[in-house]
Image (cartoon, rainbow, N blue to C red):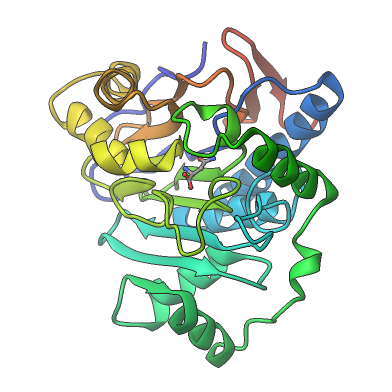
Length: 325
Ligand SMILES: NC(=O)C[C@H](N)C(=O)O
């Protein structure tokens, strides 16, 4: 069963916490078994790389940025290379990142022709007085920061071209089910100093209008991190997630004393009953409890802690392996 692992206890200054990273590959419908294996390998690789940073004493923010960048570079996931296409057959990507130590945040939306939107979001957080840059302003900032421009063709996969064609034939882009909203990526981490962070990155939803911005870059919807509560990254139908502020809603339940799993389920169920939205989330509380929960058909996820890697895609399917295997 994912989550509810032994909390390492409350933090006092100087206490060394047990680091943990949890990643997701987006709320999804069913995969072919061949693709499932590639997705599983990708998600486990990201968790292991994020954990390595934590184990070497790195920060939670560095770990989530690294894990999400790895998934952005993997064409199996809907973020960076592998992003779904909008109505014009173009790619517009959204990403955000947050440091739970001081609530500093960075986000970008509608960015094109860069490999790693999460790194641009990190630059917004670290190098500007703002939290969120969009479209042309974000593109200009990327240029000023020396972020390499790449041709959009490098981000577009054959699978996503076919996906858009199919979607246009079916004319089903506005459906609130999660089946079409695959593959957004996210990570949450706690470092050995007890700091929490999250990052989320996405190509959004297939056949979206030009300029459509989803939940993923919106602090409080696509994710949140506060050392005093927990860290969370969400996925699913963006319009539904925005309407209920899913990330902050789940952390509110944690603040009210709910367990990490209860908080996850209460917020996901609320989104389902109130706006018929499906999705999923990964979350770590300030005491180090973690979980991965979803109402979509499946959600690839992996967690790394204490030399072990936990992973799953479908409900009731968790594998536990040694980190070095
Ligand atoms: N797959 C996803 O999670 C999609 C993302 N939440 C969006 O609506 O932009």
